Image (cartoon, rainbow, N blue to C red):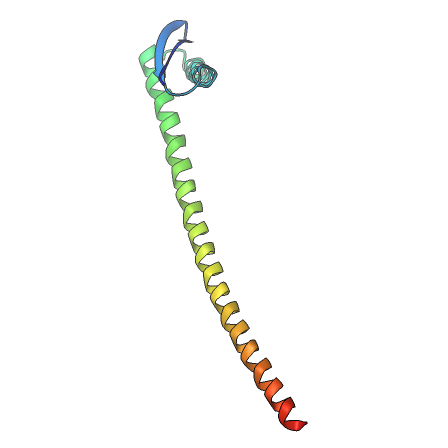
Length: 113
């Protein structure tokens, strides 16, 4: 269910429709507010629009880097899963060979008696 959450960013009030909880939306709004204020403080000539664009750019850059890192981790996990599958197959083959050798050993022992 969508929640209607009122947030305050740079002393302006916005109503956000979100599937997430109010606490989550408020925490995001606080982060946007803080980052935008940080951008404006770093450049006292920045307009509100410029600060909003730079804030958006910063967050999009972070998202892209996180997505790239996530995709790299997924690739590594797939490689590890493939390795584990390979080692499991090798272990199963070794178990079959061991069983075969144990059976041959038992047969040879029987012949020696």
